[in-house]
Length: 434
Ligand SMILES: NC(=O)c1ccc[n+]([C@@H]2O[C@H](COP(=O)([O-])OP(=O)(O)OC[C@H]3O[C@@H](n4cnc5c(N)ncnc54)[C@H](OP(=O)(O)O)[C@@H]3O)[C@@H](O)[C@H]2O)c1
Image (cartoon, rainbow, N blue to C red):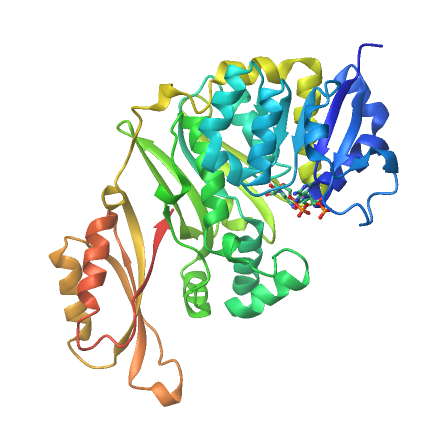
């Protein structure tokens, strides 16, 4: 038997625990696929007294991170701690000590991808990260290997399971955002502090990684145009449904005329499209390539075993020597992307859904239409809904769907409306993708 691939596992929480179980419970399968044993040398945790998977021999556990990372017998360091403090230091130390790295840490890659990959190149080592985007869905391998003959032209992804669970509950059970969030927390899909999931940050981190993989563009997550779902009103979910659409938090990238547009935002999708039908905590990514056309990847984007599945795929790839060749060839986060340009969000064309609360009297609709016309945004349809309740019988929701228009023009029109006398609340708008 060939020499074992020795690993130091940093973190034995949700994902680390899954990796430990998979390594011990499927040892034979993994050894066969890897062509040699994958051997856990150290499992580094913070608190040695916490319960761990029964299969894990206690002598493997340690709180001495530095010793584990620098152990000369270790070939690969698997970083499953999370965050960008200790995790970053540990990954850089591991690479400098000559170890390959596997990580599920999207924030680390999105924020420090260049530093980490540059360090890896200098050390002639690689960083594999299948688990960092969409958990168990093999999107990193798909884009970097299986679709390598293509120029990717667009990516649309449901990349945050928590948000998708909440939006599904609002759409299918008529729940408010707050009710749906509580349900997500009760079922363990949402953290006690759900901010990074529901404000689009998590999806923006993943989109930054996909933008690097598919387009060679280095973009800071903070530079991605981003809106979350926390202010979505159940009224708009209902109106979207009535219009034959679903609201989904989409992470999108489109390449046109050499410019890349990136956005994370709630978007109205026609109900019959595949992404509109992704329910609950699932993830899905639609990738369009110039040769292959449309492709769709679907599965669980988080959780102990789906994420462990992706971590083990990277470890097996390293054991057989594939990952070393793939990642060295990809030259990720290198200087080749220095000239890539992002499209200004104002110039990105889209159809829009606009919902206003307006005074139920003549002339208001004409004023609203004039604001849109002044910005050359043309209207596809107008629906005036019934008053919300008897107490507010003098105001009604007005929904307008526009034809495609540049985002900047549409937003300028929406801003003008705010000062109209007949407008009784903030305007709500989302782009509409067909
Ligand atoms: N959870 C998912 O479904 C999922 C999916 C995709 C990607 N990810 C990514 O995977 C990574 C891990 O997530 P997770 O959910 O498994 O996290 P987690 O359950 O919070 O586990 C973190 C682990 O790191 C250990 N740790 C924390 N600080 C440490 C330190 N200073 N020294 C040594 N060990 C330390 C913890 O030790 P103790 O156990 O002793 O506290 C724990 O075992 C994150 O980057 C996350 O974004 C997670």
